[in-house]
Amino acid sequence: MIFTIFAKNKLTLKHPFWLFLFFSTFSIFSQEKYPQDYFRSPLNIPTILSGTFGELRSNHFHSGIDIKTQGKEGLNIYAAADGYVSRIKVAQFGFGKAIYINHPNGFTTVYAHLSKYADEIEKYIKKVQYQKENYQTGNLFFKKDKFPVSKGDIIAFSGDSGSSGAPHLHYEIRNTKTEHIINPLLFGLKVDDTTPPIIQALKVYALENDSRVNNQNKSFILPLKKDGKTAYSTNQITASGNIGFGIKTIDLLDKATNNNGIYSLEMQVNGKPIYYHDVETFSFDESKYINLHIDYPHYKKYRKKYQKTYKERANKLSTYKNLVNSGKINIENGFNYTISIIVKDFKGNTSSLKIPVLGKKSNPIFSSPKDTTAYKIIAQNFHRFKKRNVTIAFPKNTFYDDLFLDFKVDKGVAKIHNPTIPLDKSFTLTFNVSKYSETEKKQLYIANLANSKYPRYQYTRKKDSIFYTTTKILGNYSLVSDTQKPKVNVLYFKNNQWITKRNTIKVKISDIGSGIKDYRATIDGEWVLMEYNHKKGILTYNFSDKKLVGSKHIFKIVVSDNVGNTNTLSTTFFKKQVN
Image (cartoon, rainbow, N blue to C red; front, top):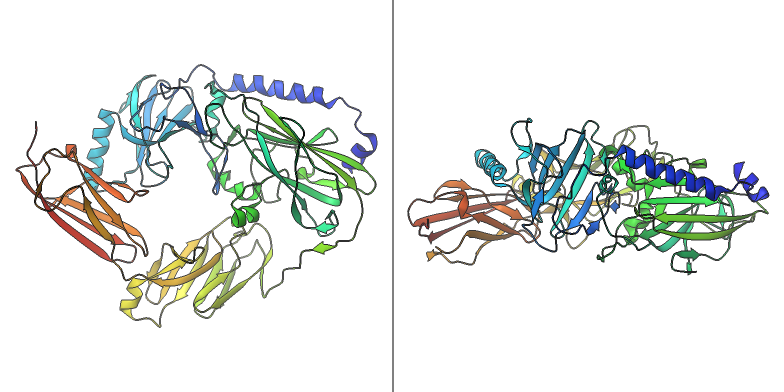
């Protein structure tokens, strides 16, 4: 009963000194572990961040830093140190155009959301794309002698490719051997930051059936008071049993208005540390546990992220250190507690929150009803349930905890619990479509109905009378029919028009049903590379890719959606060859 001792003795050790010693030692150790002058900045402009390492993203922690490019594309991107290009990948989503450089000191730097590569690399990538007749290259791996680089060489140009919200450079540093991602700021990259984190909100949780907070056996938001620039507090609460907290907090850096993530989160009980989490390093495999690190149900309902200051049983994140009772606080009757939550950014700017707690036994005035349905999930077992024409199958350990699952089929809609429960694995959702004709089957797909106005296409596999999909999202699903072909329009010129001065052909495409699946463009019957900006729905072909023969040319594009509806556009243009 460690917290009982804390409460009675009110602490006899001078813990601030030990905390100072711990963090001073950690700072020195980090500088020894990570070289401070080996890597240069990948840009020749001030390093201003729009995203920090480890900040909370959808279903993952941010694996790098996002460096602002002054709202521009085409800025020079430089090799951070000597090495060689070990991998290149061009993808429609995710990192978009990315380049990986291995360095002799055992680290790899990654540069993503690029607009194009340096000339020699760009020519190689274009050759691969034309050979494959595909914009997406997959991972291309290279040996040391293919593309060696020196520190400061131009390797690419900044852009907005992939799943990027605006032009910027996503920059990472990884351990080459283990692939663990490491905070790039630990390598001496300088960022101006004199602003402490902002604590926006606080939640308290009654963590067990017999736990109580203000006579309640549930979670709720506690109002905050601002006691100074960096100090916050709440009114006293009463509690008993195991309780926990969740905090909503952001960090602001100098010269930027972006809401960025913090570096570390600590909690103390009467001055004794019981919880600590930071974003020094983590692996891609564990990033999914963000959904246990945050209050996932609250996020799914309100799109607001609260970081818990306690660790869930199934959470395997390696970023926690020196936890006591997993950060859960056992409140005993008759004792006073001061809970302190300490938030820091990478530069050490600090904000803190104090919560006074009085241990008081009570019966609940409000309590959550017990959840019981016919579908009991034992997390470590495989489960399959069938209702009408719908079957759902959950592999072992799909769920983090046992639960009673809500499952019903009503008017063609499969209602599978609700999306506030995070899953560790994908489950299989199957529809029997034997009642439909072959023509109807071709136009059907499985859709997520989270947005009832715009059903979201789920990758649908079709096999005779069975349609199925796999997903990690609970919620409502249905079969939806798509009978409309995609829309295709050439921009900025008309049929039979001279376009000698134009450097590109641009095409606007869209689909209101199952969504765009594929497109294929040709000029005079030969495949041409069109880059797809899915955020704007615009395809672009650059005439510098190929030398055209003659002045009259036929441009043709075929666009298909996810159920096979196609639209073909063909147009004639005239263009003189300019040397």
